[in-house]
Image 1: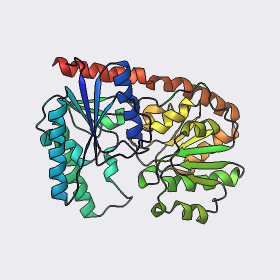
Image 2 (image 1 turned 90 degrees about the vertical axis):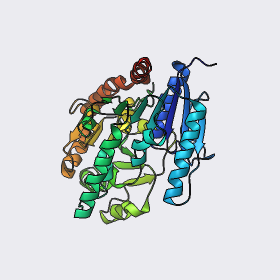
Image 3 (image 1 turned 45 degrees about the vertical axis):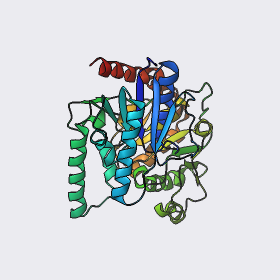
Length: 370
């Protein structure tokens, strides 16, 4: 019989290139290899898809298959969850699912042990465009009410930033940030005329705002280049926008990059144009390479990570000319770029995995002792 504490992570899929997958690969692997937990991961409809990130060989995988009509899908998902939980008999269950169903998992499985919910995004993810109809506003209110109701069923509700605390009126809530993906010994010289952004093409990432500000940057500094890495979605119309702004010669769109560290190391500035965030892991990754960041001060994450004027710049959300100004300031002032890059590398050490996972370990011990 194993005397290890059994953790079960319930999530959707872990084969993608997103932040949630990256975080889980680091955290679950660290818990299994360094803190001797028995860690199980239960995915949904993942099958045999290969993983984008490296997960520890010590993790134990399970998968639920759900298909058919919405009703049949729900029934097969619920049945699959219950079967897996009965088989694994976990001591603690953690749910990493930012969809509405994730908040109702305690009901689906009759809550057999302490349960923790990990929220990786802002509630703003429910907002899909700048202008909302009355019907969309009513639907949003209803969705938020359901979310709050579901959140109360968990023993502990984890958010990534202090800004996110304000979104939830809960007693069972606390902040544990994302761990750092890497801390390389080789870092950027900040000499290349290169700005980088990382993340999939979508409304949230605000790349249309980035391109508009980039137009202002290259009017002053035409020799600089912008590289954007992330899943390309033609529907977002970014290639057309770059063409319309006549900046297509200075902007390149790349698919997700496994060795993204190499790209950070070649960059001199990181640009985050998101409308909202859950955390902003890409900021901590860039900072680990000593790259100063310019970010909109969007809800929520950048304001926790960047010390404005010390290791990067926070620009009021939606202020596109202000965003361009701060990129230009870093382009034009090399000593500022170097000092901010140095400070970024020092300040980001607070997110090292051993510090972050230690907070999880303490939480698990508290939940077990209850």
